[in-house]
Each structure stands twice: as C-alpha cells, then as structure tokens.
Length: 62
Image (cartoon, rainbow, N blue to C red; front, side, top):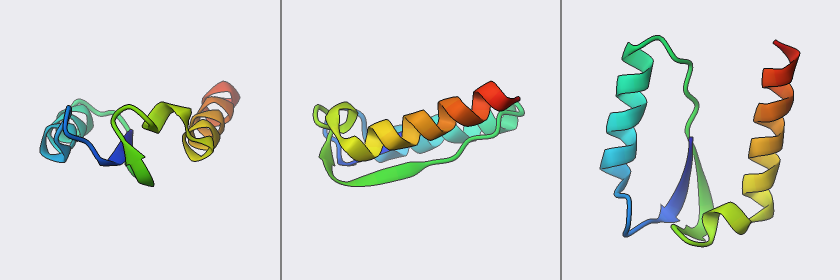
C-alpha cells in the first residue's frame, strides 16, 4: 500500500485499518509512505511508479 506523506482525503488511520483487515484475511501487505506527496500527487511520482513496478514484477514471478 502506498501512502502519501500528507493526505487530507484518506487519513492514515483509515489506511492502517484497511491494512490490518487485509492482514487478518491472510493478505501479505507492505506499506510505503512516500515523502513529499499528497493525495493527488502520489500516483504521479517516480517513486510511486518504481514501487508499483516492483510489486508487479514480483507478482508476475509468482
């Protein structure tokens, strides 16, 4: 899960509640908070694209 450093639309507490629910359901969840981002800028950052690309490569290898 990618978290923006500053997110007024989705509070971190809500994201962490979702992470806990997914983990209780048996999902492996990793959380990455990206510095200098907000809700709107998160998806457009090179760091977010690198994280997603790494996750996709790892998922494809399964």
